[in-house]
Length: 301
Image (spheres, rainbow, N blue to C red):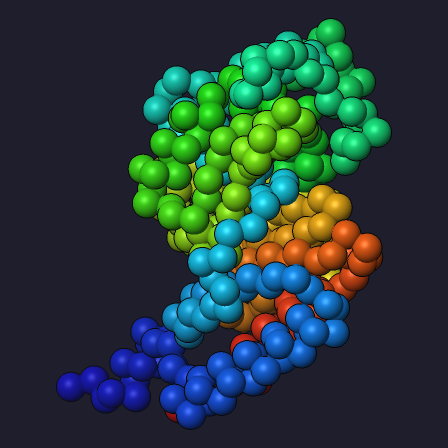
């Protein structure tokens, strides 16, 4: 008969954190979140995280809707890979690069403002082509608005929303591409919740966003993210984060999958809204740091 201790060693079963440690950590998180919210004079704060190592899930205002900003690009990415998995789209398909789109409100044409786009590089290909794969890469890693709107037109908003519904991702509403001013003025905006984005990222992290291959492709793109002032800024340098930021004048978001050595990853979403007269600040990084320290400080049975 094999001894119980030997079985545990061979299977390397995870050890659960002590219940009192989890309870104390949740109380500490709540207090620290309120402190960060007040220190940064945030109007709204939404947080959701899931730790695959301990299976602990925690949220603060997890179902509160926020203007999505560029976190909506994760939903576009999901829609793209849905079509790829179904054989209806090739990652190597060429897309003509142009800066002319149609408003969902009045069907009038509009152009994106180069000065407002985080990635001017795609504009260098105007009149030429880029592949779906290249557009998806620039949409996520440099948050290219031009790449985003081109992909939205290729895939279609109904397909993107259908992908979310198909995977039972509640709390993410996609109505349009970016910089549709007429739609913005009509109050037609993309919206997300922390819990909604958490569900999407958990599916990707678990290899269940349509397939393991599709999930890994999306994960690898997100790992190349070039804007790191959010979640990564609150972590040790050795940590790797597959994530997507979202910034406009009054919101700063980050949603990602955090890989730390010698443990399973955890998924973290931080959504912040602040007054127009305030600077963006470091609230997202501060929350990220607090979450990491809390998880790292848990005692185990």
